[in-house]
Image (cartoon, rainbow, N blue to C red; front, side, top):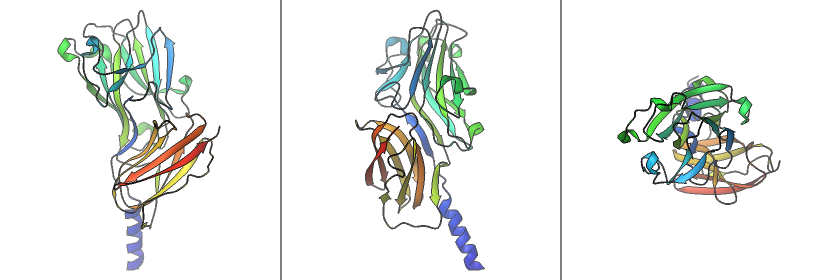
Length: 290
């Protein structure tokens, strides 16, 4: 009886993952929209685009919050609406949040309809599917005055969508007033939902297995072994070396793991997935055929 109890406890400890996991991180270093994302122009002549810091004077001549580039949408007259849509985000867990940094363009105002809406889709990245809201930023409410042109951090909970993989859209609603820049958009939580530990295992070596199926369309499974607990990343890159997805980013315990990679928003082609943990790195190739 004692032996059975010990085995049960060991299994529970093995499958427990209590870490800060990043399910999405984007700092716009390569492009706007980034690979796997979408930009949708609804009204007005302007679109989301990439600019390199230091930012223009209307944005306070600041550096980027992370790296050297940001996503920028200019003000529009008389009105404008433009969407920046993420790639699919792995399964959300209770307690997950979306966090991003924003700088308001210009210090004058107010223009009462200027806002940034964060909308949610649980199905796909098409505009009509974003029927739910995570939150909004009242841009015209941001304090007026040149010293107030600063980076501001915003966070909205995603618990309402626990158990779902989601897409997020950042919607700029403008009425001849303020543009904005976004940087360091992330989705994170304390649960590695979507990563499936295999109980009662203690691998002897660091290993990244070939994805299955391969070729795939659009979902494939990636298995890996971590012999020693520590900070671990699993990322996907295209043939140019640009990162297109972060599947794992956080401290995990030693064990065998499995995760699904959904490439719905990516084009057919060759991709590389790279596992790094404890100073060890391994990369494999996979083929997406649509």
